[in-house]
Length: 488
Image (cartoon, rainbow, N blue to C red; front, side, top):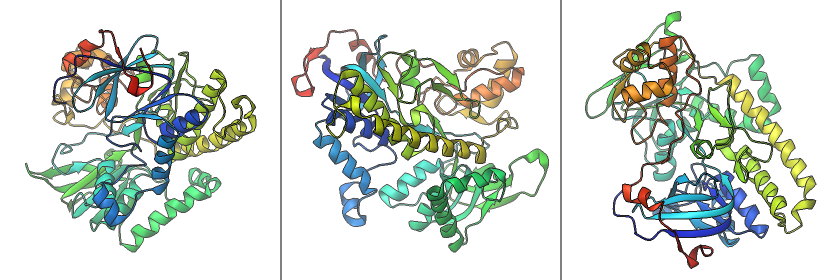
């Protein structure tokens, strides 16, 4: 972030602040605005849509067409409904009561504040990584990055690619790479979700998702791509310019099995997604540790309401469940807020009389939650995935901290997650532990033989790196901004 923040803090007054412009946030903002409330939608990106409804640059859209036209239509409806959209704006902190959010221009650092009667957090998720020897080489990327290049820019991340990790997300990534001319040498699935079994039978209850997965698998088969289940990348090899080859072996090296080397110029590795829960945790809402993933999730009711009055969590921030569940959660929270403030429902009728719609949403949510639980059973991330990491393997890329340094810190008395963080600086870099926190927790727990609690560092102020003058401006009185929804 460059430039110098403006000396005057701009202040926005609104009824509801929605943080995150992806499917959940867009849906919530639309329903709220149509219900008659003033809504301010805040997103770090230059454009709305989030990761799912990403927008192509105009020249690429003209050449290749719109990407997910439903997203374009939804964004158009949101703007037409009068939602005040603050793009290129990050939320980096908040007052203790949660009513005032501290913001900053993502490019200049110019400080701002958004004061709202209620806040909807729709901050989405980020990809789960797991270190291995060579994962810091150029050309080793997450599947989401490869998908972005292929779909947004129509550029393959490499010409010979291995896609690896676990989760249904690997399938569309591999197909997108094929679509832009890459050769996918193999798709390595850590688990065995595509073979007959009791767990896989649960997919029959979700025919639309089953059909979607079958379509991806057929595309891969037509291109001769091997989907190797129970396999993973053991190591990557290369030079200062690029990854050159990968070593492939069994998911559990201790069980034995053949290994092989494959020449590549790109490697995509990811293990699903982790919810971005820093803002609700910073605001003090009660949390629970998800037994399947170890993630610390906000406790929320069916309508997304948390233990903090006026704070709602929706979308992947409330737990990984996919785009359809995200939009259901967004609409449910919006209806709850409209009932609270006495607004109208999204179709203009009184929100208090929208019981049938709410009941339908809750039925749909239960079905989608069952699908999310099925995915957790089919694509688990083994707790011991990092147990065999060599001491020399880098874990925290921001600070250059290795697995050995983390183990030694845990063994010498720094035996909780934050003690290890303080002793090693792991998690103190620009990503603030979003990428490595779960790995640091796992390694520290293995070294001491005691669980280190949730797989995430405590949410700290500021949530995102901002220039010092921006942080200092948080304590100055805000000035009215008549162009952004009201006065201070």
